[in-house]
Image (cartoon, rainbow, N blue to C red; front, side, top):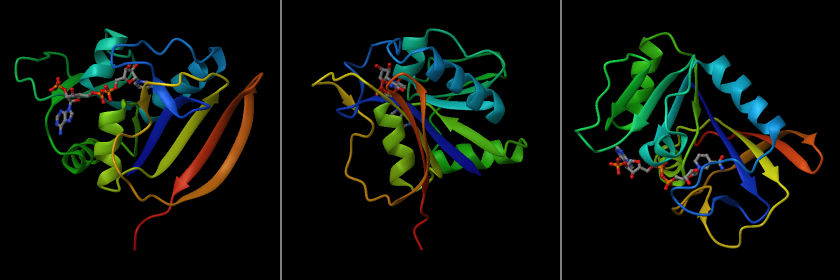
Length: 169
Ligand SMILES: NC(=O)c1ccc[n+]([C@@H]2O[C@H](COP(=O)([O-])OP(=O)(O)OC[C@H]3O[C@@H](n4cnc5c(N)ncnc54)[C@H](OP(=O)(O)O)[C@@H]3O)[C@@H](O)[C@H]2O)c1
């Protein structure tokens, strides 16, 4: 199963100033790319904090939201709240016929999947901004090796970088 980590990041490696910040600083081309990749995958996986900043499920895609809060429930099959382990989530998605999933943050959930070596690709839009403080792409110690695929300037100064994660042998 391909798991694409899809994130926008400042030049100093930040994905948000704080836990509650809506991602509205990345530019229109990054937004278009986000829609393209997530619609193509058909499923997005995110943490509850990221979901709350968006405020609603992303239409036309299955939304998997990680939370330990048992009171969060949904009657809609396109919005799933879960505390399943990452590998279990991916196994279920595979059974449902998904071949790709877009992992869309935040820092906590990125780290959860990275620690278990479940991320297969990283698509990063490097945005020409510096926050100085804030949340990083990951929040834990990791040892991932990446193979560079491509880099494209999608908007003046905004670089889309694509890496494959080299599997651990
Ligand atoms: N720049 C970008 O591209 C980008 C992309 C996405 C998000 N962001 C930003 O990132 C920030 C949010 O990131 P974050 O790291 O604070 O939070 P997050 O990863 O979105 O969500 C963390 C939450 O996930 C749940 N969780 C954590 N571990 C879990 C586990 N093992 N099982 C089940 N649920 C688990 C918990 O939810 P409960 O507390 O509900 O139990 C936890 O509070 C926001 O500001 C957002 O805008 C930026």
